[in-house]
Length: 111
Length: 111
DNA sequence: ACACTATATCCGAATATACGGATATCCATA
DNA sequence: TATGGATATCCGTATATTCGGATATAGTGT
Image 1 (tube, each protein chain N blue to C red):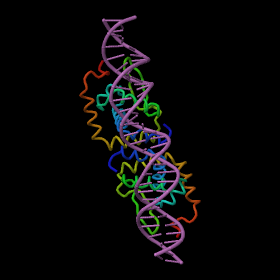
Image 2 (image 1 turned 30 degrees about the vertical axis):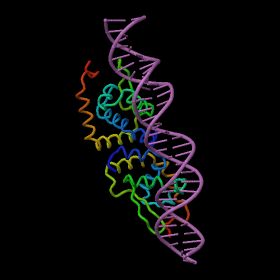
Image 3 (image 1 turned 90 degrees about the vertical axis):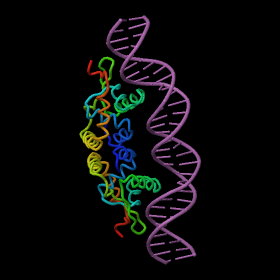
Image 4 (image 1 turned 45 degrees about the horizontal axis):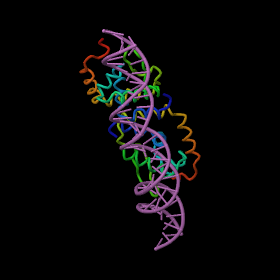
């Protein structure tokens, strides 16, 4: 993630924005958790996640069956600042997503 | 400008991003100045400016023949923060645009 | 009224983006 | 190695976005 332009393009889709912010506040999430929290199809979520990874916003790590996504350790300071500002601004809608997430059963980290 | 999503969509086009940032650092610019500084066609610039105005990022005011654009007085704090961060990050490419602007002859404010 | 400059908008074409559905891949476990 | 769950990718389609070129509108000065 070198250019703000590319960063804004990534965040200009509702699915990618919500996924990024949710991961930003939760720390690490796997695909099935995001499918549940965002209430979207698995291929759709997966496609957007791989785009965010390709742009350098997310890191992914496989752990058993699951692939966990987190904010890239190489994300520049300015991008983190923008995520900070945005998560604060979207606090309420983010809390809705966090609630769906907490209501999910059989979350991978529990096993 | 209510939602970060909409804000990011506006800034995810290179013409709109550059126009917004240039206006952000210069304070107020007319269409012909932006046409010159961004080296694009007048209809293209005009179209993007009206989009930015419709989204609540820019204000416009006609002064004689010219229409001047500035950052909207109603732009929320969080959006200003993002513009601040972005203009700092894009400092170098912004300076190139500012140089083209300064080199322009017959700028409206001179008359 | 006319000419000229600045700006805005309309239109069709080209391009980009996002999607659903099907399918492939990867891993754990029996 | 067979099965099943989780994830990724492919493909064709639908939609959205952007563009250039033409044209319309608005204001200024003659």
